[in-house]
Length: 170
Image (cartoon, rainbow, N blue to C red; front, top):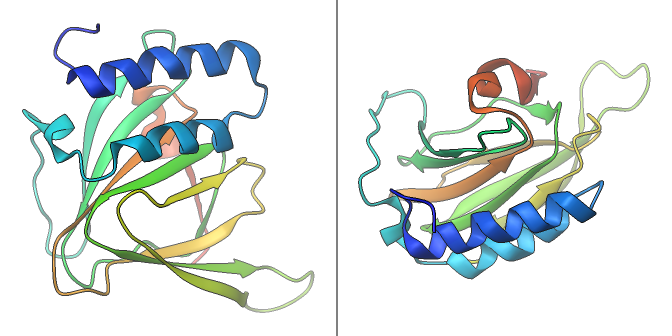
């Protein structure tokens, strides 16, 4: 067990290590693994974060000492939304509590603006994964009236979260 991590999350970190050792494209398997934490908000015990009225709060839960991945909690107040973005790296998201809406888009060659493809509601246990090839364009929004918490695993070191994850498109 990793000190200071909740035992359930510590078990997942051990399993992520196994996945990364054998899987060149780990997003789907990591997402399926993290789904077992649905409604397990106790894994956030001790997490500190500060709300900004315009932006969801992010809290680092775990940074792999080898810099291969990081686990963050995103805490969303009602009406908070990401910019339209793609990813520079693989990622897996699972919902712990509340509900978020994910809208996916495509960027047709030569088009001035993205075209909406689909929309789905993410509830506790639901996952969303991206291989990090820059083609998975989406926006996530808390369009409910309650707080939502999602858990994100990104294939970057903790000190690269700000510049190594998102390709902001709008």
